[in-house]
Image (tube, rainbow, N blue to C red; front, side, top):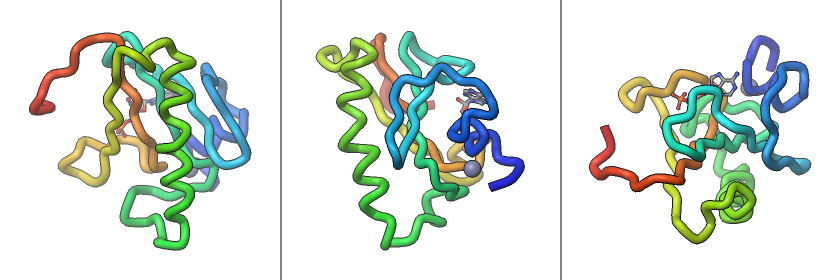
Length: 114
Ligand code: AMP
Ligand code: ZN
């Protein structure tokens, strides 16, 4: 999609610290990390938010979750644990409207989240 920051990162036209990529997804480090490890995982295909992903694309969401442990291991937090967060819509605090999963770790996470 034109004029989408994360589409541009996926296409390589805006630089990012890429952690993992394949034909379906890209993982890159968050520019304002909220934990020692803070990596974003996105589908290459543009969907603004979770309700915009059709049921037929369920495998794509599953692919992200299947790859997340490998990405966490590559970041060195596979054994210590991590949190995966998907913000969607206004009250969640979603800022970038290209669906993305936050992979956070390297410190103890609080619950409930803020
Ligand atoms: P959210 O609030 O869930 O929409 O999260 C958007 C995330 O994107 C925030 O954690 C930002 O720090 C991150 N972000 C914004 N711009 C960039 C960028 N150019 N490269 C990497 N991460 C970014
Ligand atoms: Zn996009």
